[in-house]
Image 1 (cartoon, one colour):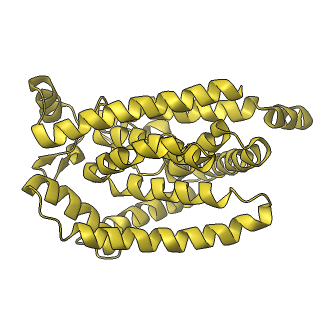
Image 2 (cartoon, rainbow, N blue to C red; image 1 turned 135 degrees about the vertical axis):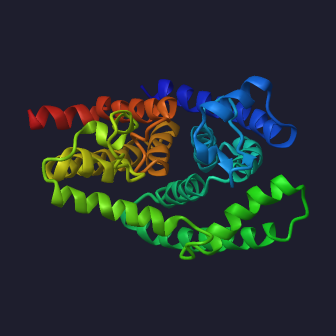
Length: 311
């Protein structure tokens, strides 16, 4: 239902804006006593930048979930602007500032990537998508690097500067292990693929969750659900999950090409922004949204027709 998807998209934007406002309040004015208790005893260790500076939570239980929600809101506003609703651009600066000061580099990059692809697929023909995407990538990367260079010359309070520098240093030096964790994430993903070969039957679904540590077993998490599937489900299970990824993304692109609606653009953008994190542990509300959107794709006329043909 196109109207339902559009209402859901604007609900995400509304929650994202409110969460961003409260997150910026937390960044500049601090946390309540209950929030400080949560940060000390229950929140992820990485919610504290450098072990000292807390990242904002907004209305979420951790900073990564908060960043993902803001990223979704940016994507929906951008998609709406591309469809001619230029009033939606008014919310983007607030959301971008909140996301940047959360200092979660992966979410920042993936949100930019999703926005680039959404602009590229505005072309009427499929053949125009690739050159448009190439142009947008070049402009997006240049714009990002220029912006990060400007950030390094800002004069703000120490906490804000530390959050901004964490983004700038890591994104400007992605291959420097002292400033970026990109190489570490790449190694973990590669290890996950190799474990699919060395343990073809897998180690079980609990091996990539905190359940493993509770039973005195090493957690084999690889940071990405796609490579986690090779660890927990083995080679066959990992390949099957990869097929699911490919089918879902193909349907998302085709759904957009056919419908050209805000709901279709929101589905495509959010799925692209969360590549490798459709089943990320600890981000339950945002994962529920992702899989609701996947279900909406499956219930679309094209998705239902495909199921009937396969049956």
